[in-house]
Image (cartoon, one colour):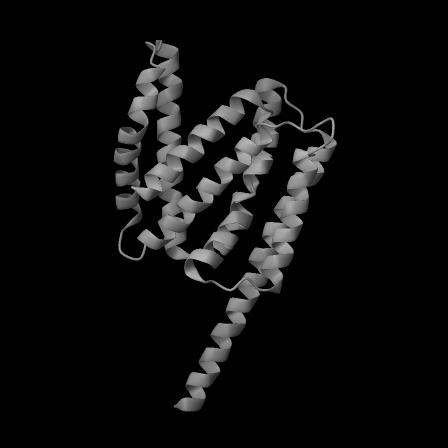
Length: 229
């Protein structure tokens, strides 16, 4: 229920932001989710927030400031909605990782769909209108792709650590920018592009350093085990 509720809040905020902002900018800001994941993991699971993670968080925060540009002419208050969405997406990721200790990815996806339908029904009915056949085609497309996303996300997290998956997730910006350009004529401005690159590099840096640390700890544990034997 927590996973479904946090996912619904995140998606509602994300969809609203997409309807009001440049799609590439929204995608860039959504990359703050891994940064929030690191902070939440520290407070909820007492995971270590070492030097490398702090550097990554600071880099990501700088990237967010460049994209959002608070206090400058290019600042869009709706950017805060995207960051709000990213916080709840980070919560969803942590809950998924927790559920994977006892549940299979397909089970998590199934219950997410059921509970999100129940939770979002009051909101949907308050704005309900009879959809056209074309609307239904697009809605069906969203349903299919969203469920594929949720299952493959849960499946990947069941196989590897969250930090290992981050660099692959950042390819979304490339796909989104290309599609937004050809479908809507949207162009990512230079400050937003620079900020997006910094956000991506911050998470890649964190993931890389985390991977090196885990390899070192695993090798150290192996050597200690050999010495004990």
